[in-house]
Length: 193
Image 1 (cartoon, rainbow, N blue to C red):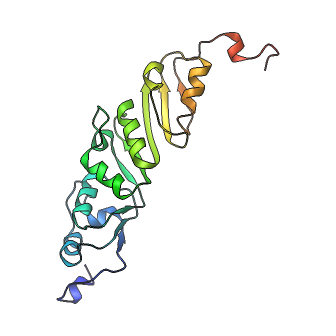
Image 2 (image 1 turned 180 degrees about the vertical axis):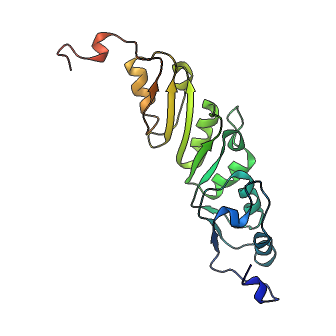
Image 3 (image 1 turned 120 degrees about the vertical axis):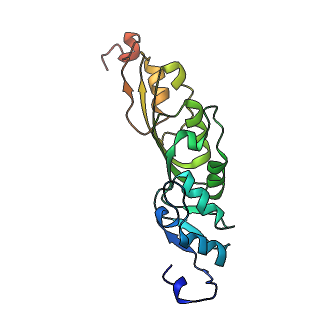
């Protein structure tokens, strides 16, 4: 905005624009005056967001340029803003992950469903941070990566094999509120190891 006020002609942003999400758009999705001027004066400029953006902010930023938006700070939003409960990406999340194929995602608010979490992790390409609670028969359907930071709470008893399978789907500790129920040999070999 400072530079724009110093000239009556369009500014060509050949080096692109890099700033925090709130400089482009408010958290409620109200685009800034500066973003509006970028769209008018150089609508194919490269835009980088250096901190977390929500999907309302991304929609404003995406609308301002015909070039892929670089989300170096990642995306932080509710699960339903990223994918419906059936596990289909929202149009905004699909656009974001198409433009930035290794974006990190933090899911806020209410826990995602397994279908949502699987879709978000598959589409994001980067690390997904989220929490989920459920019984083992539901949670064993997770397809997240071992590098994803999924805080998992299992509320019924699991076997050692079920735990090991689930443990391979997250980089964080799993809370077993229902405990472990398995044979003695599954818990320790005959030598006590």
